[in-house]
Image (cartoon, rainbow, N blue to C red; front, side, top):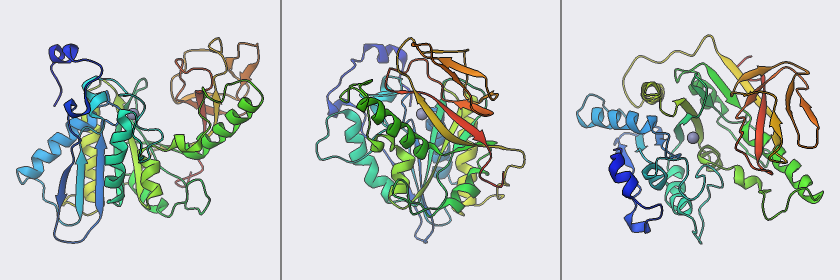
Length: 340
Ligand SMILES: [Zn+2]
């Protein structure tokens, strides 16, 4: 399913909508009632480990090596065809932000949202397969505790917590949307204080809604698996095993039930810092999940303000390319869920 690079370089950045590869879902449905799972890959176009894993599994279903016992499974091998064609993260914008149907689609990703969101809503659960820029170890993101708050009300923490431990990885991260919302609140205060122009930065919490958040907003559960570095072919096996384990765990196919991880790390995101200025600099070349000791310098603002860790923590998603008014890095602390 990957394009030859000779063809790729001859393709223009912008194609008419009807010239892009169409949106595609492969749907298997049993006559017997059961859970309805959807598996998405290449939400970011250069993250293709899940695409390969899906192709392998679909073939196994077609050849009868795997049999659907009940329920339904839908595979979306290339969720963002334009970004996939261009072999980069985004087409016109990040599909994994502000993923909401719209009557006035403007960017390419708005059209994906109008197709994908109703499809997600037809399912009970989502496994969303990604890869990462730097780091070594796969990790999975899961959602909030059960709650009735307005930000992300939720009632399926049990299944997410059980499944996340059975995907085959041993690092689990939670707390994304509430930390994001906290950052948005702070950013809005900076706009009011005159640091940023309201037209140039995002101050809408809905901007934090990606595939998994949208899925939970429709009453479903969802997990993101970050399989490997983008170009590491090992990620394909990680993605394949995770889909297989999920299908078995949900009772959709036969197989030895996956056992929960024994030796694992669980991290709760709790804070996010925006970049204020392109001359804000990190104290060192941070990688996601590097530990930071209390008091250690994380970075220094252009105005000389030194940012130190208030407690022992881990840096997550440090981004040297972020622009003023965008997230610069997140902080996470150990434990707080899954009995840790
Ligand atoms: Zn991604």
